[in-house]
Amino acid sequence: MSRAPKVSVVIPCYNHGVFLDEAVASVLRQSCTDLEIVVVNDGSTDPFTVDLLKSYDRPKTRVVHTQNAGLASARNTGIRNALGSYILPLDADDRIAESYLERAAAILDERPEAGVVYCDQELFGERQGLWDAPPYDRTAILFDNLVFATALYRKSDWERVGGYSSRFVYGWEDWDFWMSMTELGKQFVKLPEPLHFYRIRSSSMNRSMRFRHKMAMMLLLVARHRALYLEALMHEPGRVFRAGAGSFAHVLDRARRG
Image 1 (cartoon, rainbow, N blue to C red):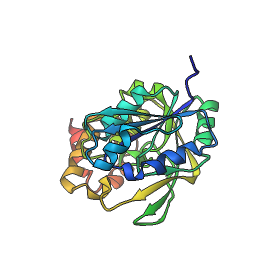
Image 2: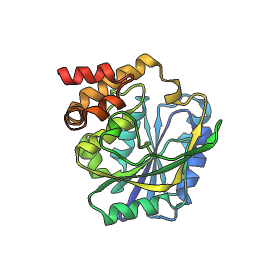
Image 3: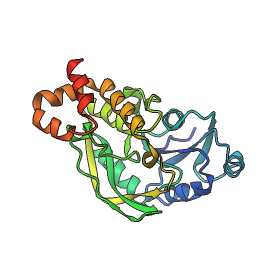
């Protein structure tokens, strides 16, 4: 029996077959070669994607077919089928730089207290630019998703937190996941370079999220991580209310009142 790979890159794909080869090729170009790619066909209906994934044959790559259940469920399915000790989620229309996996895995290898390794982003597609990801902060992450989804972590920690919550039907399942990792006491380490390439499209999920959906997701975040919010309210009340003065204000009041 062959040895399991160190890293599993999990790529959910829903009707993004036109971009998939770019994502897969960026993984196959990694300086870290001890890897596998798990593509999850999340019930695609686009004829091109359906035909592509019927017989998708790329090195170190396998395809898992599921009924459409959303991004969180697709990621969980891919990770459940992954053989690697380390997990990197990657959207089917994004790419990663050649050294990302090697450098991120080295940190997890050397630092058992580190739980998540992330980096800066380069934007491409309908808009170009750089996103200098802020350093992780235990209080700041309660009000802003500081860490994008394509970060490396241990599969064992995914198991401990119960995976991604499928209740975040409008998005932010990654934000919720990072809060769960925070509750485990995991350290977040940032690589200060743009090693992830994020494609901007007019149909990007976060850009199209309506206000009422954002409010619903905020309420769910606070309900699932109430202890984190109450801890911050107790120790840094001024900072918390400054950070949450906008949409989070009445949500915080609910958390305080129970």
